[in-house]
Image 1 (cartoon, rainbow, N blue to C red):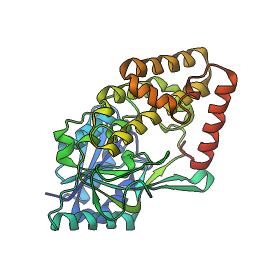
Image 2: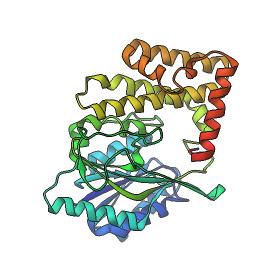
Image 3: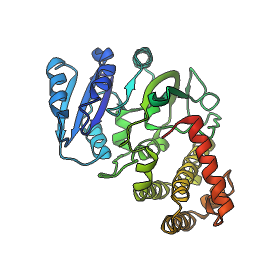
Image 4: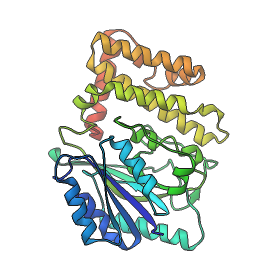
Length: 338
């Protein structure tokens, strides 16, 4: 069994996938690399086969009918033979030294008989068009250099959500909790970073800047225009996440608080995009989303409403909407998240 499976979902990725693949192969002796072609119409699968032929001991090229990012991740989990599982999008890459450190730590845990459910590392927004980088870390949220549980006291800041980019899960955990991402749907990475967490018991924060998250392609799912055009899918994912769990049923306070925080973030991001678009139809969708939350979990609705920005997201006047839009633009300028 390999130590780690890295799955790279690819769709029409011929122009940039090599950088992602090469960044993984610096540690090829310890891992399995699954290059999953999601029904591409270009040379993606040919390139994947090229790497498989050159690295038969660690690379597998998998071709499947198009089903979207979630479908490709599902196949990765199903096919993975590694003890741990990591997703790398085809336009992103790993930092070499950070990746070596991650592999070394996972090896040490295995040798010491330490079973981790999850390893957390930093990710970096890479925005070459503006010569800008922004490291997203978990200082103060998760104790460093020690194995912890949700019983440890943790406080995640506003922009310290655990994302797909920052997570490595134990493969068996993903299978045992029966994680299955929706097909033909965008923004499923939120589910990947949310749904398994109640099943995570022991985890570790490694303070390295592993994942380099590229921002800048015009067709990228996090591009503001694209996100607005796909807002119905963002709403769908938000509703699904609300439906999965009642966070107040969790005994561990840190887990409960974090799950509430993540749902708050989803409500705020989705509402902000709808307010920013500004049409009567979008504002109606915003109101319907908050009504869905209220009817699904009144306790959660009250908590989110009274959190910072929660109330302003529901205001139906020009001043309230203006505050939301200005705040969004300021934060985007600082963090460069789309």
